[in-house]
Length: 491
Image (cartoon, rainbow, N blue to C red):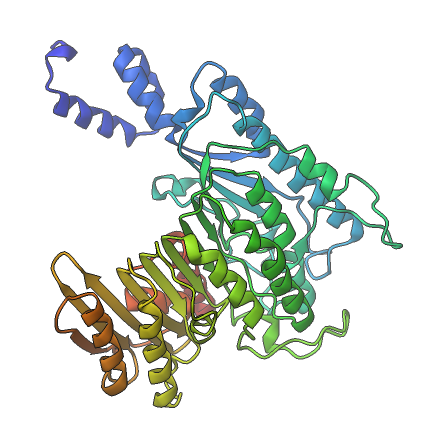
């Protein structure tokens, strides 16, 4: 039967079936149309390391880079064994880490800066050592956001390396959760190699990347200075997802917050950014804030509740004034967000998700009512708002407040969903009815739902149970959190 006699719908179905196999490239010789279609499938989503980039350059020399829509780019750090896993990184290891990251970023950006690539690409940047999952942290996984490529997972624990059964020490935690920097200093504070300025001057701007993912599977902490410089090299960025890990150290956390305040958020004003998602992750299983003092470094660790910076919140709120979509989890708090400049108006904001430490089962109901009533006042300064979600979740608790409005159908509703009792009533209902009246949508619908899950192991599981409408982190990240805590409880 002649291929050309097939209906186009059947031909598409055949190609989709072939795409589910492992060797679709062999069918590209059938005809020019199939070659084009198969190349689009093959190059749509790529998983690459720095070692793969030269091969990519050779392949794409004869093709258009615009075929690529998603790159999961993993920068691999040097391995370490059991003699090092319970120790801080040495100075030599710090230098090797900095070199690997700088070379990895420079190599990829040089490839993507070619003028033949125009369009719409997601760059998903991960940094890890293969040894990270081979010692104390056997549950760590490195995988793409694309479910079709999960067979390319990296970082699973090797059967040849003994996995430690004791909890990780502060030194072991710091080894994979420590920060990395782009400037190498000697004991006197003098730069010993390529400076940060020299490095960034050698990195070209990349116009094809419109979405950047810095996911929580990179445990090592991005310096906010590096993030601000990275963003400056992506002039067409529209969607930013950052999932940093909380430091748990008073001194470091305050310094990190100040860098976010002074460098990252101001760099977003003005620019092309339309969507920003920040999810500050933590793990109660090996969070150093559950300890007291590290006798090796002398650091005093904070209490388990994140101390939120008012200055950071103000800088974040100002950076969000031009956004269409904003989600921030655990880095700030809704109560502080509402208290910034009362004359600010979010002209373009359509969706907003924030966490609130007030949404806890044993909190005074009046505190919860105050946060939800203040949220109604803020919503009046968001003329295009469609959905607002305030939520909180952790081990044993989950709560969500949601506001939805459909101006076309003239409908609005507020929803309370939690695994503990609280009802939307009184002042809260009045405040949100005022919002509905201001939008001319009639009577507000009210829903109260009491959840009865048997167990909530983590904030990841809380998110799944709450069924948030707004994406507060990459779905694969939420699944990772859930699975990690599930596996830790089994041991």
